[in-house]
Length: 127
Image (cartoon, rainbow, N blue to C red; front, side, top):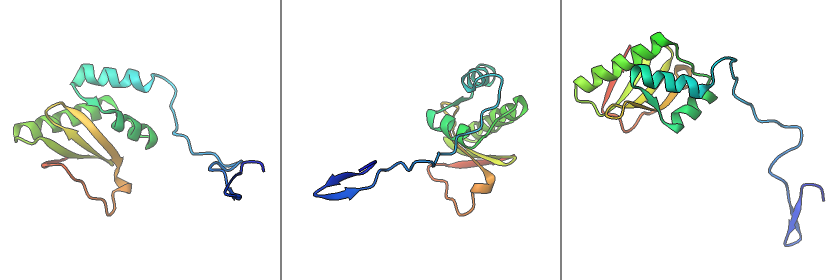
C-alpha cells in the first residue's frame, strides 16, 4: 500500500508527502548560535529561553553587539520602573523579556506583528 496503513479496512494516508521538504532556517557560517548566546549572557547578562532560541533561529533574528547592548539597556530601564515582564520594540524586532531573570522569552520580526496581541507583560520599552 506504499505509505498507507488500513484501519478498519480503510486506508489512512501517510503524514509526510514524498518530495515535500520543510523549510529549514538559514544558518550563517561562523560562531555557533550557542557560542553567540553564551557571549551575550557573559557580556550583558541577557539570556535566551529555549523557546526564544528556537524562534530567533527560525525567524533568522540575529543581534549584533550594539543591539544586544540596547536590549540590555531597555531591560534595565524597565527594571527601574518596576516592570516584571516587558515588551521591547527595537528596530524591526519585538522581544518579550522577563526583567527579573533578564531572559528573553520570545522574539518576532515586526512584519509578522499585524493583528498580534502580547499577553503577560506589564510594560513596554520602545527603542
